[in-house]
Image (cartoon, rainbow, N blue to C red; front, top):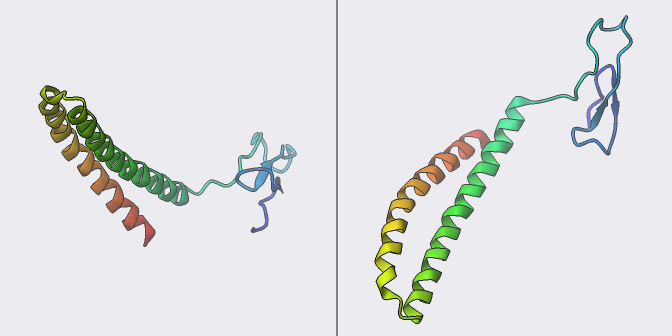
Length: 112
């Protein structure tokens, strides 16, 4: 871990690795408490990764749920409900697939 900036104390308990301390008024007039270092690029990359993985899991989960419901409805002779479920899935799938494609593309761009 790098050396903390002036006014910050290194801490293993803090998620950013630093704990803000009050700077003396003479060192930085009116600054008050200084937050830990924030890296917008790293935060954006982490958000892109999280969003991509969540959307991929949503796509996979919706497919598994759809197939499970089709099997259950067929098993319980509720075949009249299957076309409604198919219609809903056919509307939901392109929207979710577009979101997944965009999020994964953005995540892969950020990895470079």
